[in-house]
Amino acid sequence: MNIILLGPPGAGKGTQAKRLVEKRGMVQLSTGDMLRAARKSGTELGNEVARIMDAGELVTDEIVIGLIEEQLTRNPDAGYIFDGFPRTLAQADALNASLEKLGQKLDAVIEIKVNDEALVDRISGRYTCADCGTMYHDKTTPTQVEGKCDNCGSANLVRRPDDNPESLKTRLMAYYKQTSPLLGYYYATTGLESINGLADIETVAASIDTVLDL
Ligand code: AP5
Ligand code: ZN
Image (cartoon, protein in one colour):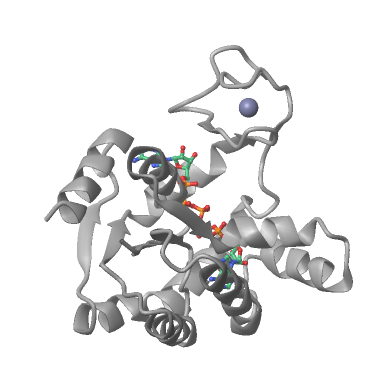
C-alpha cells in the first residue's frame, strides 16, 4: 500500500507517519528528512539546500524528485508513506509516472486539516532528540526530565532552524501557493480523504486507520 499524507507545516504528517511505520510496517519517505541529511554533507549542493530550507522556501523539484525516484527504484514494493512529498503539481506528476513505471499505484491520499493558529502553536513549541528522533512539544508533550530524552536519555535536544516565526510564514505561504492545488488534483484523480488534524494524536491516528481500512 502506498499513501500520501498531505498537510501544511506542523499538521502532524511526521508524527502520524512514524506511527504507521510502527503499526503497519510501512516505510516513511520524508523529503524533509532526506534533505536534512543532505545538508549535513557540507557540499555546495548541501549548503544551497540548507539556505533554502532555513528560509522556508521549497527546494527545486529536480532535487526532491531525484531523491524519491532513487528510493522507489531501489525498493518498489516496500509500501510507502509519502510525508512532505509531493509539494507541487510537477512533483505529483513525477510521482504518478514513477509509480506507474514500477507497476505501483497510490492507494490513498489523506489531507490532515489544521488551522493556522494551531500550526504556529505546534511548530513554535516543537523540539526533537537529535540522537533517536523522538519529538517533543514544550506545552503538550515535554520530556519527563527537563533536558533529557525520555526514550534514549540523550541531552542532545534540538530545535529546527526553520521553526522560527519568519520562516514559518514563508513555509505557510509556500503551502497555500504551491502545495494546496494538489488537494484538487488528487480529489479529481486518486480521490482525497480529509481528516480533522486538530484532534489529539491518537484520535487523528484512528481517523487515518479508518481511511486505510476501508
Ligand atoms: P518538512 O520536513 O517536510 O517540514 P513541513 O512540511 O514543514 O512539516 P513539519 O515537519 O514541520 O510538520 P509535520 O506536519 O510533519 O508535523 P509534526 O508531526 O512534526 O520540510 C522542511 C523543508 O524542506 C521545507 O520547508 C522545504 O524547504 C524542504 N522540502 C521538504 N520536502 C520538499 C519537497 N517535496 N519539495 C520541495 N522542498 C521540500 O508535528 C508538529 C508538532 O506538533 C510536533 O511538536 C508534534 O508533537 C505536534 N503534534 C503533532 N500532531 C499533534 C496533534 N494531533 N495534537 C497536538 N500536537 C501535535
Ligand atoms: Zn532520544
